[in-house]
Length: 271
Image (cartoon, rainbow, N blue to C red; front, top):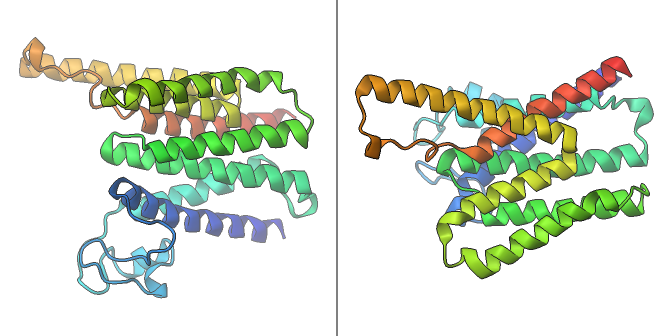
């Protein structure tokens, strides 16, 4: 029975992955993500049910639109598969089983799904546009506050752990209202900080520390590669652009998910 449950979880993950790709494409364009029917971005033809089956539609259609034969970007199937395996691995390492689907387990799982929606969509948009959408940041803040209320009211967790996060939220949102409207270039930094706080609330400080370390190592390795390439190409100093094209939100998301799954695995193995 547990195998069937995990198959359902994987399928649910791919369905969410399909939604993530839709949101990643539409949100930067200010398009509706809930009421507008799915369509081909090449010919704008509305897609039918058989065109929207996660993973399988892409495979059966050979990565092409059924109507205009235009190529479908591989990111769609990649995001769907990654989302499916992320849902599956987290459920497995959280020890979710048929016989322990208690209300508190379902509640924690629901909040985790909301968090994964934030991480995947934020990362996808940042990878495509090097931008952290303000609407996604606000979504992260809202689900974080809802999670804090749940933890403190239902599970009787201490509020003191979350006070500093709430203070940072207030400070960053106030800064956004007062300053960032005039200096739009800083909005990316603001989005990264809000992302780090949201990640800390949902995955914990230990995972977040490892996330920051892994992200820093990836960035340092990227700097090293850029420096070597610039030396080989004899790029002038004023033409160098270290750090300007790094997708910090995307790297944080990848590092956070990997570390969270790894820590869950260690916890299950030793406990």
